[in-house]
Each structure stands twice: as C-alpha cells, then as structure tokens.
Amino acid sequence: MGGINRSYIVSRLLLWLLTIFIGATLIFIIPRLSPGDPVAAMVSRMMAQSGYVENSTAMIEAWRVKFGLDGPWYVQYLNFLKSCFTLDFGYSLTQFPSRVDEMIGRAVPWTVGLLTFATLVTFIAGNLIGALMGWRKTPNSVRSALPLLLTFSSIPPFIFGLILMFIFAFWLGWLPFSGGVDSQYPEGFNWPYIKSILEHATLPALAIVLTNMGGWALGMRGMMITTDGEDYMLLAQAKGLRPSRLFFRYAVRNAMLPQLTALALSLGLLVGGSTLVETYFVYPGIGWLLYSAITNNDYTLMGGIVFILILTTATAVLIIDLIYPLIDPRISHARR
Image 1 (cartoon, one colour):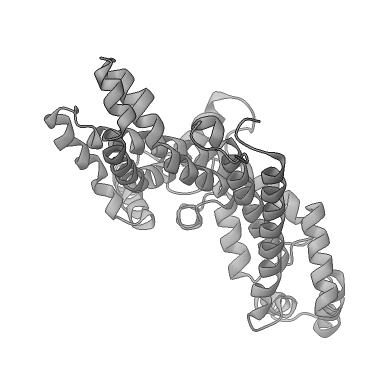
Image 2 (cartoon, rainbow, N blue to C red):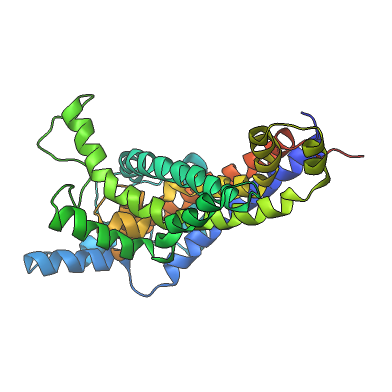
C-alpha cells in the first residue's frame, strides 16, 4: 500500500483497539454513577401501572441475578467486556424478553436508510455550494444567491423539524408527522409500503439536510480560498486547462481532504442516529431507541447502542486515515 508502512498500520490498529476499550469502560461506568437501581425502578413502574406486584422484593432479587447485577463491580465489568467482544448484550432490562441485539437490528435499517441519504445529500450539496462561493470565477449573480440556501442552518434541527411538522403535516396535511410506516400496508417490496416509508422519512430528512448544509459550505469555502492561491493552481491555469477541470480536478479535489475526514466521522455516527430528530418524529430508529433506553435507565440497551456507535465511529476514522494517501499522493506515512 503506497505511502503506508506496516508499523503505521499496526500502530493505528492498536490505537483503534485502545479507543474501543476506553469507550467500553466509560459506557460501563457512567450509567452506574446515576442514583437508583434499574431493576427496582422497573418493578416500581409495574406497580404504578397495576397497583400491586406480588413478591416484589423476591422479583427484584431474581431479576438482578438474571441480568448479572448481583455480583461485584469487577465481575460485572468483565462480563460487559465479554459482551462487547461477542456483540451479545443479552436481554433488555425494560423490554424483557426482547434481546438487545435484536432490538438494535430492527432499528438500524431505519436509521441507516434515513441518515445515509440525508448525510450524503447534505455533504454533496453543502460542499458544492461552498466550493462555488469560494471560487473566484463563479458569476456574481450565483455567488449572491447561494448564501440564501444556507439561511436554515442557523435554526437548530429540532426547532426546524417542528416548523416542518406544523406546515406539512398539520397545516397542509401532505405528509405524516410520526412513525416510520403506516401499519395498514403489508410489509414487503411493494409500492404502497415503500411509498409510505418515503413519506414518513421526508420530514426528518429535510430537517437534517437543510440545517446542516451551512457547516459543510462554510468549511469548503474556506478551503477553496486557501487552495486557489497554491502553486499547482497557478501552473494549471498557465497550462490553459478548462475552468471545469481546474475547478473539480485541482481546486475541489485538494480542498476536500478535511471535509472527507468530517464525512468519515459523520458516517461513523450514522448508527447512533439523530436522537432529537427521531424522538420528536417518533421515528423507529436507533436515536429513538437510545432515548427510550436513557429515560428508562436500561443499562443493557444503552450499553449496546453506545458501544456500536463507538465501534462504527472508530472504524470509520481508521479507514479514512488509511486511505488518505490514495486520495492525496502528497500524504505519506511511509518512512523516508
């Protein structure tokens, strides 16, 4: 692999393992710093709903044994590390007998489908707008109109989502305001089911895309201004290359490197979902599942979701770091 030697790959893999280990340790510690017993809280909710639960004390002890919460902290810690290594997080505390991996598996496709589309559209549109804003040969009329597309970026996504919900769901009635799909349609590869999924995903996707383009655009604009004065740009202009070739092959390509790093981090965070957006749209993704786990103090479900988030983010950073020399030959990790 050009530009990368074996020692660098080994060091990056070790750093990847260390990152995951520290993340898993923090996942174990932080929820247990909060006061209260999750099993006792679960039984208390059952008593609040039914008015009385027979043998509640014995039930609490049995459930603590069932979920491994009766042993000393170091035993619980080793069991948690084992579950992280095997990706088997056992049963959900609050939705027993549902398993954590099954619950995450049902939620991941919703989140990945929504956020992959929204992130890629935001990345492409934002960087294109930023590149045009920073390119000296962009017509003044276009340069003046482009900032208007970024006016929504100053609005927090959850506020903008509520605005979209009011306009398109309650006022105009064009789109649904919650859920992932209408239950009246049979699940499968058929147009009514797919159409319902697209309709339910439209408002959450718009809330993410329109409020996040500004960050990509401003970052790309700054990099384009810096790139425009480089020696290789002057040489390319002296050769008489076409403006489109100068723009895409020389300016945009070299200005994209920091943006690609940010994109890798964004894609790594996809599995974690957009908690606020998914929560107020009641979208059945990872974000909504994580919100439910936090509010119910579900240790096992929280641990499983956050560990998957750390794993995907660390892996995305590792991959982008290794392929940097393939994107830009000036970057080399090989010994000189």
